[in-house]
Image (cartoon, rainbow, N blue to C red):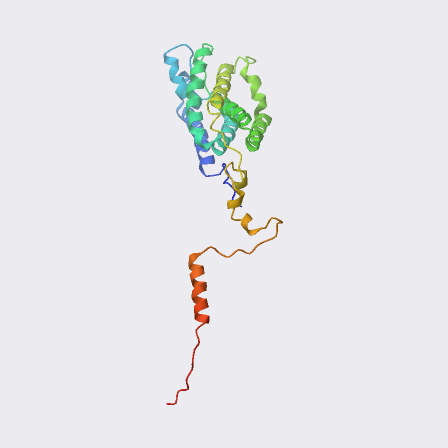
Length: 250
């Protein structure tokens, strides 16, 4: 019987876009090191008009190699999960997530420059977790559990436990991911169904079941093919023709 295609399919995009995102933040850091620039002033600076530019630029700016490295792996893993399981929503979540989480950081943040991709990472973490819970799909729930297992400790950094960490950006990312999971809750992959699980399934019209009687015994059905039927009739007519062979006297 025919089974619906899996809604989750791997393609090169699943890894390509996350890899490009990671390479971009490393490229920005490499430019800083090579030419001696410091882009910190382009981060989010709360409650100032000039600080709004950080909404766009801050995810690509990092304070050092340790900061950059700590963001690289979770950014790649969580964005790859996003593109694999939620491909139609992936760009919306990332682009709008950068904008909304950055703006929330601008609203609630301390008077300091807030930089780094951690806000986006918290968006991805929160969205992947809550979306899987809302989905009621066993694979997506499993994704939620894996996300919590790998990065569950991130929750505590959404609170002011370290003055050197932008907990405001983390909190903004968590809220943004949750909001998107609620907004896009209807855009949930439905569990795969077999054809007999469909609501409009009619057992009498099932071509496979027509080959079995009520006791489950196999029945050989004549093919419903006009060409085959006509061929059978022609063969029958030919078989009924009587041929008379005469000896050739020449």
